[in-house]
Length: 335
Image (cartoon, rainbow, N blue to C red; front, side, top):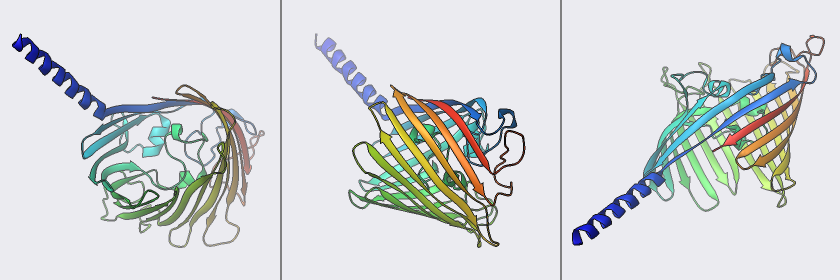
C-alpha cells in the first residue's frame, strides 16, 4: 500500500510540474484577408497609395503569423513567424526560408524594474503596428509606412514608476534586420509619461538610413466610449525628410461595434518650394464576433503638388491624378 501511495504521489507531482511547465509556453497569432475595390479608378489598374500593405484590388491575403513565447523564471524568448504579402513587405523579404521571421528575441528580467531584450523586435516608433489585429484601421498611414518596421539590436526597458518608463536601444541601421555590414549603428530612446510616448531615433543617414526622427504617440480617453489617439513625427536626413500628424478618434457604439476615423496630414521637406504633401481620411468600422473582427473601410487620399513620384494614382479614364478613393472590407481572426 505504501508503494502504491508513493507512486500516486510521484505521478501527481510529475503531472503538476508538467502543467506548470506547459503554462510557460504560449502560442498566439492572427490571420487576415480582405477585398478592396477602387471607387475612383479601375480595379485592373491596381493603383498604389504609397503606403505599406493592403494595396491590392479584388480579393487578397494580408498575412498569417504565429507567435511562440516561452517565459522562464527570469528570462524568456519570443519567435514570431509570418507568411503572406504583408509579412514579406514588413521584413523586405530578407529572411524567407519557408517562412519569414518578423520578430525573434530573447529577454532577461534583470530586476522587477529592468528588462533587457536582444534580437529583432518590432519598432517602438509610431501609433500603428504590423499586425492588423492591433490596429483600428485596416490600411496603414503614411507615417507608419515611412518609419522603421523592426529593429535588430539590444534594448533596455526601465520602469521608473507606475506612470513613467524609459527605453534605450542600440541597433543596426534602419530596417537592417540581419547584420550591419558597414560598422554603423542606430540609437533609439522612448520616454513614457502617463500613457504618452516620446520617441527618438538616430542613424547617420548613409546607406539608405533614416537619419533623425522624433515621434510622439499617445491618446486620451475622452469618455468611457470615446478615445482620441494621436501620432506626430518629424524626420530629417541631411536637410530633407518627412513630417506629419494623424488623429484617431474612435467611438464604441456597443460592446461589439466601434467606428473610427484616421485623419492624416503628411508631407516632405527639403530643398525647393512646394514639395508634395497629402491629406488622407480613412473611416473604419470594427465589428467583433468572438475572436473574429470584420472591418469595412472607406479611404480618401488627396495630394497637393503631386508629381507622380510617390504613389501611382489614376482616374476612371486612366489619366494620372492626385486623388484616390477606395472601399475595403477585411476579416481578421486572432488566436
